[in-house]
Every structure is written in structure tokens, then in C-alpha cells.
Image 1: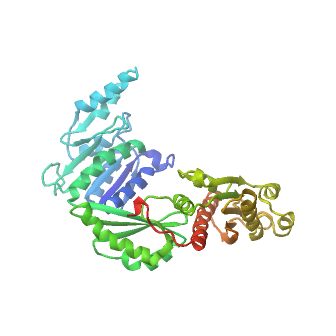
Image 2 (image 1 turned 90 degrees about the horizontal axis):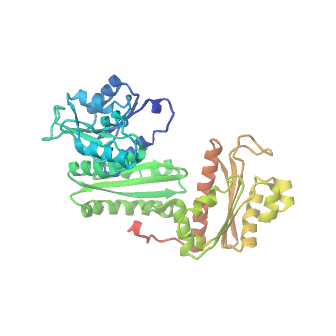
Image 3 (image 1 turned 45 degrees about the vertical axis):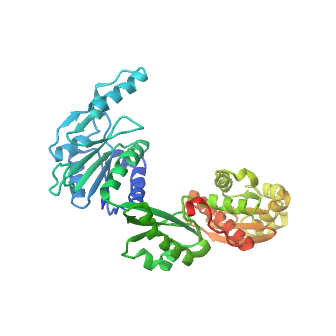
Length: 432
């Protein structure tokens, strides 16, 4: 099954809002084993919307259109799609009752134009919107692209534009509908990898990624991470997972400790799990990242058991007073140096009696400082007195450099703990 997304809204074309719906739907297609080869963004123009839908139907089995289901004059998606198939719009009483109840509960008068949200193409399936007033719509088509609920070959799914509404309608209506239509149960496992470049992972797993077999392996690059979605279909969940299991096992065998989870766990959660498993306390000392590293670690539930302290030592004075860095090292090597990063990690361990300390010092820009180029970052990790320091030369703007610094600090923490305490075995619920 193939799907194509059409996102409607002039505000998307103008860059006034970020198109998060397209990203969300692309991930959802992969989750359900649905192939997608094209995405389209079109403004609030009737002829262009119609053309986009017709073109997409020539390429895909399922056309998902988001946006344009609201009550205003520029919300014309339903009207445009209905006109393609000569379907009259009729008032749906259940949708109308919901809209009226919404305004009555708030003590507000309903505008006449709100009735537009209850107008549904004749014969279409209605998808309830649990987070808003505009229901989703499914128009089923036969092989000749004529509206029909028999011998269905293709379909057009209309979803509301607001992301929280789109997700609700998709998850509770559209996704179950497509899953039932596929005839098979689609299962996926996410394998998350850190410490290796996407190109390296692709080279190691080339035969698995390019395989034409019943199991697909789709790579996605993240910030200092690579994610692999391993997907298979079967007559039931057990059959699909039976196909997936040996492929995931092979990926682990080839990539070793670079695989930090085969579930939904985040990198920081994997690091915290490793700290907890070994009863290790941790302290962070940050300069250019300004507390971002501490924030990601503290976001993990249960971290209060082992997180001791976090310090932002942005100035040299703070590095001396809070992290025990010597004035001599600062004068001789500068704040952005392996020597200072190492002393920050050592000082944090000594001063705050932590088993693990991680320090970050670098220049995130926008200009060179003290002769150090933008993107030069040193990360030091101290595990039980053994200090490891790495130099990084990141590219990008200030925000990207800081994000890359945090992700690589977490990766280094994990690697250093594994080297000192031994390999972490997979044992949590999401990895069975």
C-alpha cells in the first residue's frame, strides 16, 4: 500500500508555521508498513487543491489531505475534494449536535459558518475528532476512481489541520481503517544507535537495508543518532514479530553496544538506566551548553536517585570556583581546551563526590573566541577517576552546535560507563 500526503494552507507555503503534520504522517506510514514517495504542500486555492488530489491519486493508493476543514471561507478542502467526485455535501446531524453542544457548554452563540464543519460528502465515512469540531472524512473509490464502498481500490482521507486534532483523528480513525484494509497486521521495532555515523551504519547493514524480503529496514538520521525501523507484516502480531526478531538480532550482532535500545527509549533514558543499574551518581558541569545536558538528564523519571548536581560554569571565574579549574590552565590553554574540560570533570567528581562527571566546554559561536573557532568543543567524562576527553569540530548555527554537544556528551557517558563496568544487557520491557 502506498500513501501520499497533501498539506493544505497558504501559511505553510509562506513559512508562517512549520509543517509538523507531514513529519508526523510520514512516521506513521512507516509504522504501518505503508510506502510513501511524495508529499505536496498547496495553498488555499481550489484549482490547485483539485489538481494536487487528482495527481496524487494517479500515484498512490491512499491520499491523505490535511487542513482546510475549518469554518472560514478559505477552508475549502472538503468542497474541492467532493467536487472532484461530484459528491454533494450534506449536513451530518451527529456532527452538528456536537458543534452545538460545544458552544452551548461555553455559553457562546454559534456562528452560522460553523455549520460548514458538519457538512460531509455524501456516502463518505466520518472519523470522529476527539480534540476539535471538524470530523475527518474517508471517501472510498473503486478502480475507476468512482465513489464506492464496494471493491475499494483507493481512498482519500481528509484530516483537520491543527496537529493535536489531526493526530487524534488519525490514531482513532484513519490508522485503524488502513490497518484493517491492508489485510495483514503490520508490526515494527525501532532500533536506536549512537556513536556511529549514518553512512557507517548503512555500510554495515547494506544487505539488510536493501533486502527485498518480507522485512524492511528503514534508516532515519537524528542528532548524533541513527534510528532503524524494522517492519514486517503477518496474519497476526505473533507472525509479524517472528519475522522481525532474527533481523533485529542480526543488527545487534553487527553493531554491538552501539545499539542502545530496541524500543521507544531516549538516549538520555538509556544513560540514566545504565547509571541506575550500576548504582552510579552523576554530576554535570557545562559551559557552552548552558544547562541543556542537565535538562535532558533530569527529564528522565527516577534520575533523582543518582543525579547530584549540575553547574553552568560559563565564566572562567565560575570554572575556578565551582569546578576547581586552575587559573594556570585557563591562562595557558584557554577555557575551550582539553586540559580545562578534563579539570572540570575531575573537579566535579572531587567536589561533589559523584561516581560519574561530565564536562562540556566549547565555542558555539557566532564568532571565534580566544583564537578558538566556532564549533570547537571539548567533552570530558570522568568515571571512577578515569578521565576521557574528546575534541569535536561541529558545524552549524549556535543551536545546532549546542544540541550536538549535548548528544555527544550523553554518548560519551554511555561509552565510558560501558568500558569501565562492562556491557549492559538488554532487559527492559521494550526490548523483549
